Image 1: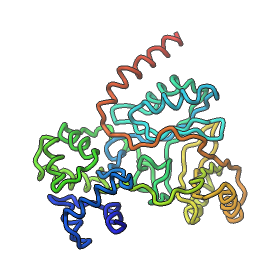
Image 2 (image 1 turned 90 degrees about the vertical axis):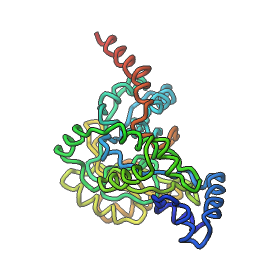
Image 3 (image 1 turned 45 degrees about the vertical axis):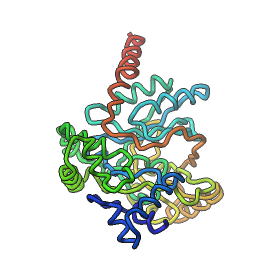
Image 4 (image 1 turned 60 degrees about the horizontal axis):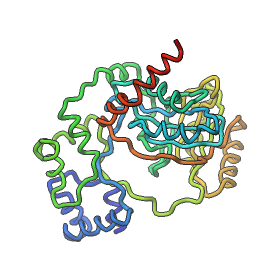
Length: 346
C-alpha cells in the first residue's frame, strides 16, 4: 500500500489501462492494484485522483484577501465568502484583518468585482487584496494557504502575459475536458474511456488533449491527493514580516533556506497592511514557532512582524474550474448584491 501510494502521489499513468501499468511496477496484478486502491479510498486515505490544473495558465486570477469584520459578523462573513464557487480557503486569524479568503476568479471576471460582492455580504469594514508578487519557496507538502496552486515560476506574470490571458479563448471541447478531468478518476480497468465518453469524445482525443495541455503548462500532472499520515499538533504559523522593499529579495531568499519554512512569498502591501513578506512555518507548538522566528531574526536582523494563527478553518477545497455554478451564483447572489450596494450609495 505504501509503495502504491508513493506512485500515485507522484503520477497516475495517462494510459488505456493505467492500473495495469501501476501493477506491473509493483509486481501485482491489475485487479489487486484496483482492490487496494478502492480500499484506500474507502478508508479516506486517497482523497481524490485527477488532473492538477494550473489555474493561471487557463486565465484565472488567483489571489488572497483579508477582511476586517466585526466579531458578531465573522461567521456570516465566512459563510458568504465560502458560497462563491471560486473560493478555495476561508479561515479566521488572530488579527484585526480577521477573515482570510483565497480566491480563483475566471478570466471573464475580475477579482475586484468579486471582492466587491463578498465584502458587502461579509459586512467587511475594510478589505485588502494581497496578490502574489514573488514566490521564494513552496513545499511539496500541502498547506492551507496553498489550496490553489500558486503561479508557476517565481515571478508574477508580466503585463504582456496578462494581456495574453485576456485574449485566451477556450473551445467548448476544452471546457468539457477540463470539467471532466477534475472529477474523481473511476477505479475501473479503463477509466479514461469512461471520462472520454462522458465528454462526448474518443479516448485518443482525450489523451491528445491532455498531452497538449501538459505541453502548454495548464495541466501539471495526473495524480492522487492523499491524506497526510500524521497530522501535526499545531500545523503551521503564518508570519507577516514588514520588510523594506530594498531588503525583500535578500530576506526572502534567506528565509527560503530555513528548513522549517514551508512557504515564503512576497505579496502586495497596502497602507493598512505594510507586510511585504509572508512565511509559513511548520511547527508542533507555538513555542517551536517562536524559536524558529528568533533564529531567523538572529540571522537577518529584527523586523516588525506578526504571528498569525488560524483560529477557525471554515473551508478548504480545490474549487472546480469553469463551473456552471458561477453563472448561478452571479444570477442569485452577485448581481443582486451589487445592484443593492449601488442603490444604497445613490
